[in-house]
Length: 166
Image (tube, helix red, strand yellow):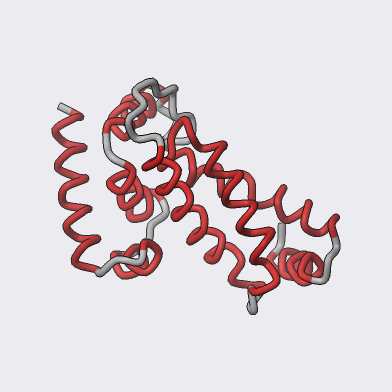
């Protein structure tokens, strides 16, 4: 969808248009799903539900419709980490389908398996830094932690990823 159309949908949804809200949720679902699946793993549907509840409740406060995706990303990461922490002790984890690997299904499965072994905070910093392409300052702002904390989490997450990869 074009940025102008998305902005119009945001404004209409803020004014109570339920069809516009439905269209926004339809547009945002793949984006939110990718973030939640990468961080909350098998609990991604729960995280996604929490994200959309927060979006529905807070959309009226979004002052700049063009900032929709950044605002939703903050909510998605926060909720995915929260849900993953709640369910951290559970062991069974299904395949992660949305890990990109340039079309190599075996490599994608291997990467997904290694990501599953990491904790939610480690997955979050790796996904935001390497899959979403954010710099360390943006990741820090998104996770509401100091840049030094992001750097140390990235260092530990990369080391854990390497150990699990071997």
